[in-house]
Image 1 (spheres, rainbow, N blue to C red):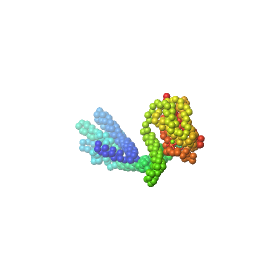
Image 2: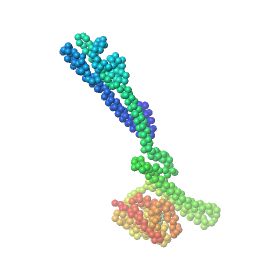
Image 3: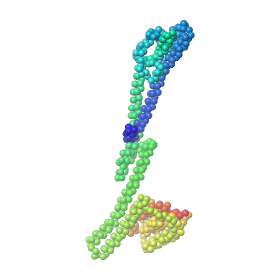
Image 4: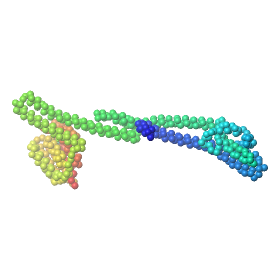
Length: 473
Ligand code: ATP
Ligand code: MG
């Protein structure tokens, strides 16, 4: 039990190629053993069986002759015994004193020679009623039979050569054994070679996986031409690495963009504090300007941090949404009323607001509408108009927010939903500062509610964002 456990542990430590090779070499060895055994049994049977049969048959013939003799002893004719022998069987009859008086082949080895070569352990193929002797390079069978007449007993010896080519069989066995060993070694080597070759991609994958680290994601598994499982696995792993690398790159970009965005407000705040330190608090104008600037930059930083936190929660899937049935028209009119109160530079109009219910999270829905309204105000010069229309169209609400602002060039209309993307423009409204996160947040909120966003814009004329919102069933 202990030994088996040890072997198991040892085998488990082997490489797969070694395991495969060992496994099918073992099958090969078993197959060889079975073939050899079958061959050996066949040959031995072919040798022993005819010898046994011919002796038995000859003995039966002799028994018949004895039967005749019992009836009429005077008809005894030694030649009758010669005729009773099957070809190859030699008969010798000896009396009590060992004198041979019938011999069907005088050239055959003598009884004494046979017993001198008698095998104490006869081969397993030999029938136990027979005696076996090895005479030189020959194996010889012998069966005995006693015959008693008027208190006189004679012994009949039946001889038959099993094989005269023992040496040849020994040689054959050696050749076979050598061939087996060569075959097994060849199977081991070829098997090891093939399985190593087949499993090379796995080795490469392994060493590559070891090397890959957060900062070092460039490595890819080389792909072969074959359409096999290993190549498919390699391709899957490469695709996975591509996706991971894409994610990591985005993450790193995000961190670097966020740090970059924080730099400006901190630099401005620091600048004003240094100016106050240098010129003192006497200059009332400078003090007021500094306080205003610091307050505004602090507000920017706070906005940025809140946006970053929102996106970070969204990425981690921890941004909470408490969805319930909402009256969309109420939300729109409320947001618009608040908007009108703070915006004095632009005309803000709610053209149509058809009642409809949606299923969503109130806080983020309000936040999303505000992103579009803020942008409309921010990217429209003072005196422009912001108009909002909400109309029911079948099972959807079509909410459009239009402005008469600077517009967005067609090539930028997709980009603006990416994080930190801001479009540089000559005639950008001067106070338009921002971080480029508003629309990516709005997009995330829209996606979480099954809301589609469409942009229609012309440079210098204005922009309309249309949100298609599913109505609650
Ligand atoms: P904030 O994070 O403060 O919202 P932001 O307004 O610059 O910053 P987004 O709201 O994501 O960022 O908008 C991205 C960019 O898309 C803007 O910088 C602007 O160039 C462009 N944009 C968005 N809305 C409009 C609009 N109504 N008219 C013209 N350009 C717009
Ligand atoms: Mg914005």
